[in-house]
Image (cartoon, rainbow, N blue to C red):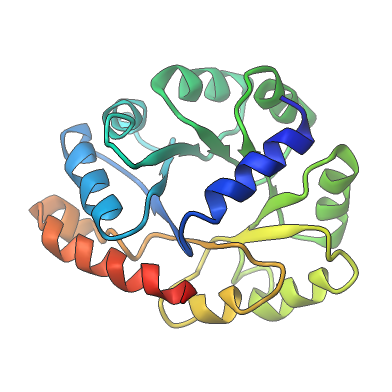
Length: 213
């Protein structure tokens, strides 16, 4: 998969809904009902971060949910890419980008949303062919004003800002011409996941799905 092909696919995934839930899952047994709740609420693209021992099993379970498109976040190494692909991930997300990681994703035909926080990082990825990127850490890197500023000289790049995005600022990001969607964890609060309150999570997802209206 070329970077250009990866960007086309990433853009398609980002346009499925205004919010991509960023999920840290400790218990794989809750993965499938969680995915079902989020998809039912209108958020089909799901990012499971590889930060817990249960992450790969969670991806396997979520990949079974009809209507969902499951991705792996926090990809750092070629080994992460291989494991995510084997578990059923349809896309990858990384906090930054290295040549080894980009090579691995391209060789594995795994569309990657590579992270960038500065104009130079965004330009380097653009030079390689990546026109869809993750702006991370969004709030710490200057928030919507910074992303708007980067967008002025680099209008050919579209972003998914993640990191500090919340219901209070998501709409501001989504109003930018260079933002396709945002990534956020607020749609699946840890307490609701632990309690198995899937109806409440579906309700949060439905509210988030309206942000792009």
